[in-house]
Amino acid sequence: MFEGITKGLKGALSFIERSRLTESNIHEGLGQVREALLEADVNFDVANDFIDRVSVQAVGDRVLKSIRPSEQIVGIVHQELVELMGPVDASLPIQRDGLTVLMLCGLQGSGKTTTCGKLARMLKEQGHLPMLVAADLQRPAAIDQLQVIAEQIAVPCYTEPATSTPLSVCQNGLKEAKRNPEIGVVILDTAGRLHVDDELMGELEQLDRRIQPHQVLLVCDAMTGQDAVNSAKAFNDALEVDGVILTKLDGDTRGGAALSVKAVTGVPIKFIGVGEQLDRLEEFRPEGMADRILGMGDVVGLVQRAQEQIDTDEALAQQQKMMDGKFTLEDFRKQMRMMRKMGPMREIMKMIPGVGGMVDDNPDMENPEEDLRRIEGMIDSMTPHERNNPERIDRSRRNRIAKGSGNPPSEVNNLLKQFDAMSGMMQQMAGMGVKDRMRAVKEMSEGGMLDPGAQVRKEKTRSKRGSVDRDQVRNRKRQQRKNARKARKRNRR
Image (cartoon, rainbow, N blue to C red; front, top):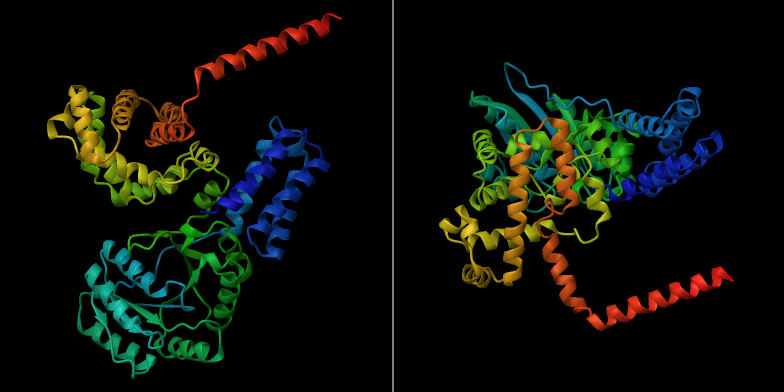
């Protein structure tokens, strides 16, 4: 997510950190920041205003005469990023009595129907029973898609034949919801178009006027960049949108839409879609997004994901096992499965402070998911006795595990070595304070323990290149010594 803008901003800010700060080179560095924003498809006026605000603060005496001026500038950029995207109130106005009506609108292909399901799932987890209403009568199979989603999350869905009108579907859906006292929220999935047009806006304006939803939420595809911003402005001009849901943010390498929507339209981003699964909808937090854009991680976001996906009692039991030195490969496998529920491993690792930058800087760390699957396959090929007593795994057992998992014995050996080192480190971390734990996490990352497939990739790379002949190494060293002697002779002359 946002790899392009993160790399550009880090490069520009590192230039400022390397320089002896003066007003001129601050302006030069901020020029690079502006260039990074524009390359990330941030709105032109938004990028200029952002740089103007940062410049006013960055060239002041408070910064230039401070002990660590470069850190002050990073802090200013961070705060301005937060201001650019916020403030945000991600809460929804759920009524205590009666129905709460939410209307979702957007262009075709933005992920609107799937987002209806994600929002319904989130509300259900919060203790509300939502009902979906299939009012998108334009797109073929939109009604069927919403019904399938409703079945997956076990919520009611109201539908009518495609020959009906969107207004009658919504009105009849509300009547149906009022008959069931358990239903507290109605989510209207309205029609979209390939582009903003008068017919679409007329239909939505009629629904807005007749149904009077409590909130209108616009669904935008983050990967379309400034097109998403322009469509958001058009929808807001017609409907007075209450909030934006940015979808496909996990595939957006630029970030222009996220940084521009609020500034251009005045409408806050309330939620973000970070995956295709129905549990991949998050509240939008400008502070966490600014942290991640600047490569600082996002601890709060990481904790929230963990609380949603990881069983608390199971996690406490695992921690106690670490403290007691009884952490086994069976426990390790359980932890891997819990972590994979939180989302793609590459994104999770980027949320850990001090680790995100290493993920971006390490081209080999392209697909940790595949490495975890390979490791899980090796553990699955072990007997319960071997998982709970990994020190008992001898050569013959390693060969059997390797054959069963389709991996060479050397990879099984590397797994056992890494697990032994990691379990010892985790046992030490269990008794540490927060700062010491963060330091230990960084050490584990630098040692490759947070990237379980690192050793595997090294072995593969080594086998591809072929083993280096020892005679070649000797000849190279001999030549280096000769060159050094010649250099010494020249210096004496």
